[in-house]
Length: 178
Image (cartoon, rainbow, N blue to C red; front, side, top):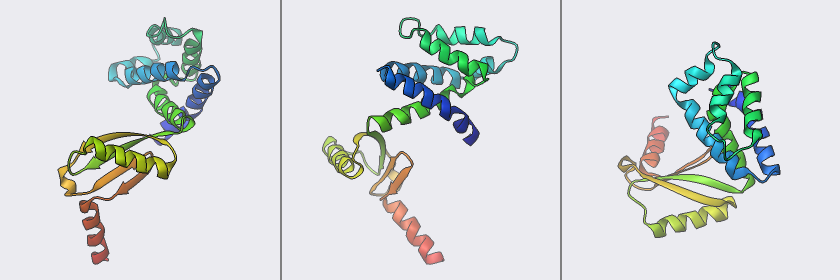
């Protein structure tokens, strides 16, 4: 898995820089997201990994998905991936592209897991506090996990803040057993 992310990194960076320089962040984001989801399908993944199918055919099949949205730029990008045998890396490329875009736009997705459903007011309050602390625009997604007992767990990128009762009890248990 780490190897796939390493392989995808330069392609994601190249796609992002091209999209940024040509004011096409949204269209590239949509295209890569869709292509990444398509390639994540087992049947499509096998088809693209097959040595029996020519690269030109693979690229044509993928490029057909966006005739009105993209000119030849996306096709050239897909051809470069195909030439290097990297079409199956599209899901990882799309993921890394979105991270680069979020960094560029100074925004971050935060997953909030709580023991109970948060009200709109609580979400707004939390978003404002995180915005001040992280100095970024915040987009919150919530989910409920009653096993937390109380409190919340925040996930923002690679950062995890566990303020749940369950997490505190686990830390206390570890401290007492050492």
